[in-house]
Length: 163
Image (cartoon, rainbow, N blue to C red; front, side):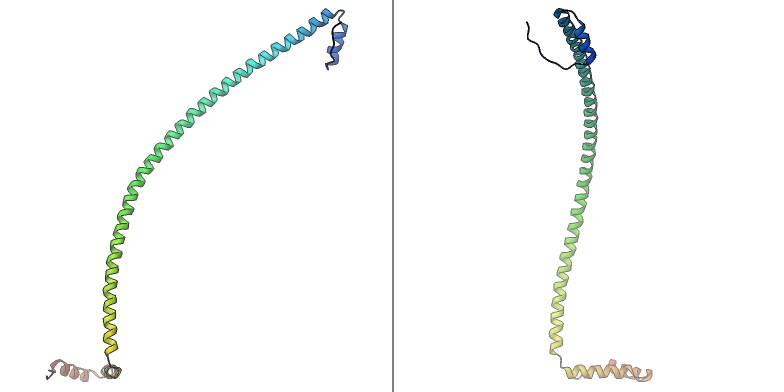
Protein backbone atom coordinates (compact mmCIF):
# COMPACT_ATOMS: atom_id res chain seq x y z
CA UNK A 1 0.00 0.00 0.00
CA UNK A 2 1.10 3.50 -0.79
CA UNK A 3 1.90 6.04 1.82
CA UNK A 4 -0.86 8.55 2.45
CA UNK A 5 -0.81 12.15 3.58
CA UNK A 6 -3.46 14.16 5.38
CA UNK A 7 -4.48 17.41 3.64
CA UNK A 8 -7.12 20.04 4.32
CA UNK A 9 -9.71 20.48 1.60
CA UNK A 10 -13.28 21.73 1.40
CA UNK A 11 -16.08 19.41 2.61
CA UNK A 12 -17.57 19.13 -0.91
CA UNK A 13 -14.22 18.15 -2.40
CA UNK A 14 -13.61 15.60 0.38
CA UNK A 15 -17.08 14.05 -0.18
CA UNK A 16 -16.51 13.88 -3.93
CA UNK A 17 -13.09 12.27 -3.36
CA UNK A 18 -14.52 9.64 -0.99
CA UNK A 19 -17.31 8.81 -3.46
CA UNK A 20 -14.79 7.56 -6.01
CA UNK A 21 -14.45 3.71 -6.05
CA UNK A 22 -10.83 3.19 -6.78
CA UNK A 23 -7.52 4.68 -5.99
CA UNK A 24 -6.90 5.20 -9.69
CA UNK A 25 -9.97 7.42 -9.99
CA UNK A 26 -8.95 9.28 -6.85
CA UNK A 27 -5.46 9.78 -8.25
CA UNK A 28 -6.94 10.95 -11.56
CA UNK A 29 -9.13 13.45 -9.70
CA UNK A 30 -6.12 14.86 -7.81
CA UNK A 31 -4.14 15.09 -11.04
CA UNK A 32 -7.05 16.93 -12.72
CA UNK A 33 -7.24 19.34 -9.79
CA UNK A 34 -3.48 19.88 -9.93
CA UNK A 35 -3.64 20.34 -13.68
CA UNK A 36 -6.45 22.90 -13.32
CA UNK A 37 -4.49 24.76 -10.65
CA UNK A 38 -1.43 24.64 -12.89
CA UNK A 39 -3.43 26.28 -15.69
CA UNK A 40 -4.72 28.91 -13.22
CA UNK A 41 -1.18 29.63 -12.07
CA UNK A 42 0.07 29.87 -15.67
CA UNK A 43 -2.76 32.28 -16.47
CA UNK A 44 -1.88 34.36 -13.43
CA UNK A 45 1.79 34.35 -14.45
CA UNK A 46 0.84 35.46 -17.96
CA UNK A 47 -1.34 38.15 -16.40
CA UNK A 48 1.59 39.21 -14.23
CA UNK A 49 3.83 39.33 -17.30
CA UNK A 50 1.32 41.60 -19.02
CA UNK A 51 1.06 43.76 -15.89
CA UNK A 52 4.85 43.97 -15.70
CA UNK A 53 5.01 45.02 -19.36
CA UNK A 54 2.36 47.69 -18.78
CA UNK A 55 4.26 48.86 -15.69
CA UNK A 56 7.51 49.03 -17.68
CA UNK A 57 5.75 51.01 -20.42
CA UNK A 58 4.35 53.42 -17.84
CA UNK A 59 7.80 53.75 -16.26
CA UNK A 60 9.32 54.45 -19.68
CA UNK A 61 6.70 57.15 -20.33
CA UNK A 62 7.42 58.73 -16.93
CA UNK A 63 11.17 58.45 -17.50
CA UNK A 64 10.89 60.26 -20.83
CA UNK A 65 8.66 62.94 -19.29
CA UNK A 66 11.11 63.43 -16.41
CA UNK A 67 14.03 63.68 -18.82
CA UNK A 68 12.13 66.31 -20.81
CA UNK A 69 11.42 68.29 -17.62
CA UNK A 70 15.05 67.91 -16.54
CA UNK A 71 16.34 69.26 -19.85
CA UNK A 72 13.88 72.16 -19.75
CA UNK A 73 14.96 73.06 -16.22
CA UNK A 74 18.61 72.71 -17.15
CA UNK A 75 18.11 75.11 -20.08
CA UNK A 76 16.33 77.60 -17.82
CA UNK A 77 19.10 77.31 -15.23
CA UNK A 78 21.74 77.93 -17.90
CA UNK A 79 19.84 81.02 -19.06
CA UNK A 80 19.57 82.20 -15.45
CA UNK A 81 23.28 81.55 -14.95
CA UNK A 82 24.10 83.68 -18.00
CA UNK A 83 21.85 86.47 -16.68
CA UNK A 84 23.57 86.21 -13.31
CA UNK A 85 26.93 86.62 -15.05
CA UNK A 86 25.71 89.97 -16.39
CA UNK A 87 24.45 90.96 -12.95
CA UNK A 88 27.73 89.87 -11.39
CA UNK A 89 29.71 92.17 -13.70
CA UNK A 90 27.33 95.06 -12.90
CA UNK A 91 27.72 94.40 -9.18
CA UNK A 92 31.52 94.30 -9.50
CA UNK A 93 31.47 97.58 -11.46
CA UNK A 94 29.23 99.22 -8.85
CA UNK A 95 31.41 97.88 -6.02
CA UNK A 96 34.51 99.29 -7.73
CA UNK A 97 32.82 102.70 -8.07
CA UNK A 98 31.87 102.65 -4.39
CA UNK A 99 35.42 101.65 -3.43
CA UNK A 100 36.83 104.53 -5.49
CA UNK A 101 34.43 106.98 -3.84
CA UNK A 102 35.37 105.59 -0.43
CA UNK A 103 39.05 106.11 -1.21
CA UNK A 104 38.35 109.71 -2.27
CA UNK A 105 36.32 110.28 0.88
CA UNK A 106 39.15 108.78 2.95
CA UNK A 107 41.61 111.22 1.38
CA UNK A 108 39.25 114.12 2.07
CA UNK A 109 38.87 112.96 5.67
CA UNK A 110 42.66 112.91 6.05
CA UNK A 111 42.89 116.46 4.66
CA UNK A 112 40.08 117.61 6.93
CA UNK A 113 41.74 115.90 9.88
CA UNK A 114 44.90 117.87 9.12
CA UNK A 115 42.87 121.08 8.86
CA UNK A 116 41.18 120.35 12.18
CA UNK A 117 44.58 119.71 13.76
CA UNK A 118 45.85 123.03 12.39
CA UNK A 119 42.72 124.82 13.60
CA UNK A 120 43.11 123.25 17.02
CA UNK A 121 46.72 124.42 17.19
CA UNK A 122 45.63 127.92 16.16
CA UNK A 123 42.85 127.98 18.75
CA UNK A 124 45.21 126.65 21.42
CA UNK A 125 47.56 129.56 20.63
CA UNK A 126 44.87 132.22 21.13
CA UNK A 127 44.68 134.04 24.40
CA UNK A 128 41.34 133.72 26.14
CA UNK A 129 41.44 137.40 27.04
CA UNK A 130 41.54 138.35 23.34
CA UNK A 131 38.58 136.04 22.61
CA UNK A 132 36.58 137.66 25.41
CA UNK A 133 37.32 141.11 24.00
CA UNK A 134 36.28 139.97 20.50
CA UNK A 135 33.01 138.52 21.87
CA UNK A 136 32.29 141.79 23.70
CA UNK A 137 32.96 143.75 20.52
CA UNK A 138 30.61 141.55 18.49
CA UNK A 139 27.88 142.03 21.09
CA UNK A 140 28.35 145.82 21.07
CA UNK A 141 28.18 145.91 17.26
CA UNK A 142 25.03 143.78 17.33
CA UNK A 143 23.34 146.30 19.65
CA UNK A 144 24.34 149.43 17.71
CA UNK A 145 21.80 151.44 15.82
CA UNK A 146 21.99 151.69 12.04
CA UNK A 147 23.80 155.03 11.85
CA UNK A 148 26.45 153.96 14.36
CA UNK A 149 27.01 150.71 12.46
CA UNK A 150 27.55 152.66 9.24
CA UNK A 151 30.14 154.91 10.90
CA UNK A 152 31.89 151.92 12.43
CA UNK A 153 31.93 150.12 9.06
CA UNK A 154 33.42 153.22 7.40
CA UNK A 155 36.18 153.43 10.01
CA UNK A 156 37.08 149.76 9.74
CA UNK A 157 37.25 149.84 5.93
CA UNK A 158 39.37 152.97 5.79
CA UNK A 159 41.73 152.11 8.61
CA UNK A 160 45.32 151.65 7.52
CA UNK A 161 47.57 149.85 9.87
CA UNK A 162 50.75 151.72 10.67
CA UNK A 163 53.76 149.58 10.78
